[in-house]
Length: 429
Ligand code: ADP
Ligand code: ASP
Ligand code: MG
View: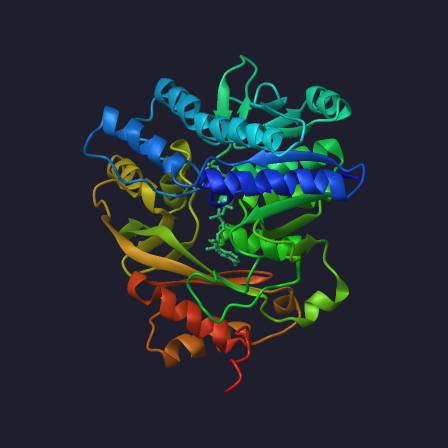
């Protein structure tokens, strides 16, 4: 049996925790007789943010804010700077990989660490969000054959020039799944600071319940809508290559959540999870000429900057004008509005406004495919709390609403509890 175990940043936050993870790796290799173990590590918690902060403070002292989005906004966006930022960020994982390998050796195991280039993680050259092109597993397999527990630095790869790249924030999950797929691992364990995937973020909603089995499709939607327990790309990869993911705690041996292909019983559950995404911002263009091609021009401007647009609403107004509203990651708002200011709309340009004080709540469930009335119920639950819905979007198994940031957690709780996801109340004593 071959197991890939990924330890997240919080599991490696202190030397004591690193020793604990090392003991766990040694125990897995010993207990499950003959098991081969490939470990993937994140940087020690907070380290990646610290490194980005240092780079930003160096080049643009006033830009200290760090956003946690699908890629890393840096103060300077030149390719040269982004190359160096990847080089810098990758050091976080290199440090934890080397420390864990030493700790495993200290715990009586045989181990060595490998950085992106050594572990054969080949990517394109999109710094900060590199795509994996393939994994050359020769070195890892040779080290496994030699009896080592192989500790791989997550989050990083190498491009055709041998330059270091990174896979986007939270990317160690994707490293782990890619390695599990390439090595044909039996399972990819994601060891983190929660004991599984919950019906919503247990740090935000105390009544959240652990889910035992969840389909790839649902996890994909939850991860895409703010449940950062797994990076969305890791779920996409797992789905494509049939990698079984087991999300569990690094603290003990309790089983966590299995992410698996859809099972027939899953469709009977209307809503399986609710997610909150805080890092969204809204752009509104009032009075856009309502003629073919104008909307295309707006979104071409966003695409040219690689800005990912999420929800879009267009209302035809009077007088041959229309209003267009859309959302972008909050860290991209300034670039988005600056780009729109340069678009040529003709004689009567639209009024452009933006709003950072929004957030998005999404409810996800396979049962939505076959049950009507989910949206009506969701709107009813929000209305009962006096929460105004600003935007809505749906997919086959998801409904997302944008509300004022102030009501985000209230809306999350109202939908979570309203759809019956809360744990049963603690028995009265
Ligand atoms: P790691 O450092 O192990 O990669 P992350 O911080 O990236 O850990 O992910 C784990 C965190 O994800 C949890 O601490 C929890 O707050 C958050 N989270 C968000 N949504 C969920 C959810 N639905 N289930 C479990 N955890 C969630
Ligand atoms: N250390 C990286 C980050 O903070 C990658 C990861 O933790 O998965 O985004
Ligand atoms: Mg993570």
